[in-house]
Every structure is written in structure tokens, then in C-alpha cells.
Image (tube, rainbow, N blue to C red):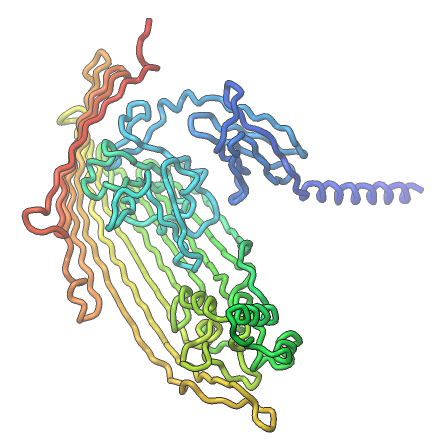
Length: 623
């Protein structure tokens, strides 16, 4: 009897545990509204699940949100100027009211300005936006794709979905330059670079400089705005690891719907009859198309379905280590991604193994305290990209070929295994042939940057004086290799007495044509920055900054490309002076004097001054 009762208890506990596990894994929805301290709805609030990338949304214009979560998820609500609010999701909620509290400490928030100078947000006279890095932690292949809608004042567009070319172009406060490069200047740890080379998990701070007073020190290069990215560095703490792996699937949701072969032929006949011409297809031919009685001479092909998949995968991986002691500190990270394409490939293809874009990245930042006043910084950033394409062309030509063909023009492949020419009379290729039977094109690029920086506190000479000297070397190697094949193409327009296809060969098969292109790009960079800050007492503060930089870039390609081999040199001198009285009256004056060999002698240098001021009513002593 005792054993029977014991077994029943164990059985009951077992089923209870299954029920609890099922409930814990079941997703449910929470929805509601986000309000400010006055009860007004707040649009644009970031709503996301803590420690889970890719799960989040934003409140709409009425401050409302809907989010699917798991039981026990911590949902965070983040908005500039307010403290982050956290909600523990335990059950379905339909009428949540989240009230944000103003962040008083935001007045003391530190923002990064030109040349790495840091100041409190309340004392900034220029248009500078400091971005919450947590909002950028999403599984995307490029940081640039995440800026639109997340950073105020930035407009971004993605012009292609092709792997490796689906990087968004972005502009700060619209397009400010016409007929030339309108992109913003991107500086990563003080060096000009690309957002494509930075993993969001490596970012410590992200600032956007928007107006002339904030960008004047960069001269002509800052005309379209400046993006400042500071990566993470080591800390005096025990060794800690961060690992992340994401798999994302994308669906093609909005695609044009094409007419089938039978209805296309009927509509073509109607169009001809309306114009007074004879119909192109007889009733017998219409039946052949409708019932698929001869798919060689009367095909019915949806070319969109032949070359496009409805979904494709993307994977990203990340691993970092961080730690250090009182003398040396380190931060090291590895990242990688693999992105496939929406174009589908015939598995029987012997030449091309599918469009793909693979990236691999390494970042290492090491800080060493040589003395109490001297610090040495060493950084390495390396990135490799591999992109596979069909040998004949890029995907724009494939899609263009799709748009030129009707469903009844040619079959994908003839029943005898021969490949058709696209229009039946020339050697033009169908999208299927372009994608699967023209060989392989591979583009590889490896970029590495090595940085050495020295910080020296000169307070023993002049109180508040600091010096930074930084040197960097960048090496960029690109290698493009093409194995191009022109396949044998046929055109059939009838059948012979035995029922076999009769026609002619449009092109002879051409053996593989091999070509390659190599490019090496080298850049040397040196800069020196002097910072000084002094408290005059009674609320008066003076700050000053002087900066000099130079760069020399050389590029070598094929021997006959002499223009690319010409070196390009750049120099710049800039300075800034600021005055602050009790965080109430603030005046900043700065200039940039920059020159480049891109311009003709006598016009190589330009002077770009600016002055700005601010009055902060909240800091004014009204009584």
C-alpha cells in the first residue's frame, strides 16, 4: 500500500513538472501604453527583452506597444531623457500602463565630441546625439542597417538585398552635398573607417555630430556630419566572457504576382485583336499551354519562382574576453557572419554554389599604465569578407533578365537537357542560365588596422594639460577572381517527323575564361591632441583643445592603372576654446584648417570657423 501511494505521488509530480515546463516555454502577448510623468503618451520608446537580442519593438504615435514574450522575461522600456523601466512578464497583459520617470542624471551625461573630447551633455552647444548602445544590439550583418529609426536625424536607405551589398546608405539631416560623396564621416576610435567593420557588441559609445558648430574642426570632411564610435576597452576586473550566436530567417513577403502562361496568351490575343491584328495563339495552342501538353515549344514558366526562394538564412556569431589588473587591461573579440541569398540555385549546378556573404572579424584593445601619468594603448582590428557571385553578372542583371521574359517565351531547360537562349534568336541568357551555368566570381577582401597611442598627463608642467599622440597603419588587400563560362545555348521552334525538337545551336560552349584583379591599399596616419581645462573659480571654467593630424594613403592595382597609384595626402590643424559660467552661460569657438591633394595648388587648404553659445534656463539662479 505504501509503495502504491509513493508511486502515485511521483507520477503526480512528474505530470506537474511537465505542465510547468510547458507553461514556462509558452509565449504570450503583453500590450499597453507608455506615458511620461504628466500622463502623455510617448512615441518611439524602445521596448525589448533584456539579454535576448532581436526581440523588441517601438511604441507607435499613440505610445502603444504589443510584444510577444516568454514567462519570466524582463521587458525594458528605454527612451532618451528618462530612466530605463523594467517589467517582469509573468502572464498575458492587455492594458499595461508604463510610466517613465525623467532621468535627472541625464544632465550629467557625458557625450563624446570632436577628436575624442568628452563633456557633459548640459554644457554642449553643438547638435550632438549620444545613442543608447543597447538599442543597437540586434542580429544584423551591418551596423548601418540599424541606424534608421533608432537615431534621431539619420535617414537611411537600403538599395539592394544582395548579400554583401545590402548595406544601408545613411545621411545626417538629409543630403547636404550634391554631385559628390554625401556620406557622413565615420571615425572608429579616432580613425576613419566603416560601420560595416564594427560589431555592435564591441561598441562602448556612439555619438552623432550634426551641425556646423560640432563638425567645424573636421573641416571639409565634416560637411555631411560625423559619426564617432568608441569601442570597448579592458577593465580592472576578473576575466569575463561574452558569447552570442544568432540564426535569423527572412521571408519575402511582398512580391509581384505574375500571370500564368494560359492567361498571358489569352490577354496577348485580346490586345492584338483590339488593335485590328490577328491573334497570335490558336485555340489549339491555348489548350496546349493550359494543359501542359508540350512544355518545350509552349512553356508556362513563372521566372520569379524559378530564381527566388521564399526564405533565406543568416547566422551571426560573437565571442569576447575582457579583464585586467591595475597595470594592464585587455578586451578581445571575435565575430563572424554567414548570409545566404534569396536567389535559389539548381542543386545540379557544377559551377556555382550559391550567392553568399561571409565575414570574419578580430578586435583587440590593450591598455598599459607605464607610470601614474603615462598610458600606452595598442589596438588591432582585422576583418575579412568573402562574397560569391555567378560568373556572368551580378544579381541586377539576373532580375533584369527575369523582367524581359514572358511565361511562354522559353522553358527553363528543354526536355532533351539543352539550355535555351533567352529570346530564341541570339546568345542572350535566361536568368536560370545566368544564375547556374556561367561559372563563379569570388570577391575577397582583408583589412587590418594597427594602432599605437600614448596618453601623457602634463599636470606637473601646467595644471589640467594632457597630451595624446596616436599613430596607425592600415593595410587593405582586395582580390577578385572570375571563372567565366558561356554555355551551349539552343533555340527550338518545331518538332520533326519523329517528334524530336528541331532547331539550331545559338552559341558554342566556350571553355572557362579566367581573370583576376588585385588591389592593395595602405594608409599611414598620425595625430597629436592637446587638451587643457582650468577652473578659474567662482563658477568660471576655461577649456581648450589643439589638434594636428596627417595621413598618407597609397594604392596599387594593375600595372596599367596609373591613376589609382597616385598617393593621396591629407593634413589638418584645428582648435577649440570654450568658456562656461555656472553651467548657465556657455560659449564655444572652434575652427578647422584642412588641406588635401585632391584640389589644385593654391586651393588645397580651407578654413572652417564656427562659434556657438547657449543659455541654460534650468541652471539660472532665478531667486
